[in-house]
Length: 89
Image (spheres, rainbow, N blue to C red):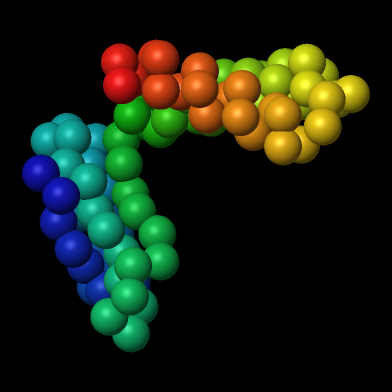
């Protein structure tokens, strides 16, 4: 479950919120002045997010290497077409 909590609430109830995240696998969206600024998630989800981010960075690096000497317009066309094919459009 995703729960919203103000920064002040998080400061006042950190232990309780950590238990909710750790044992119930809840997610806490932390707000400040009514705007989302951070989130608390359990370590398993955090590790998955970190691995996905690392993989995304690796793939972007590979694309950069492949298209290093290609004109930007050509690269954009080819990548857009590949996205359409991958999405089945």
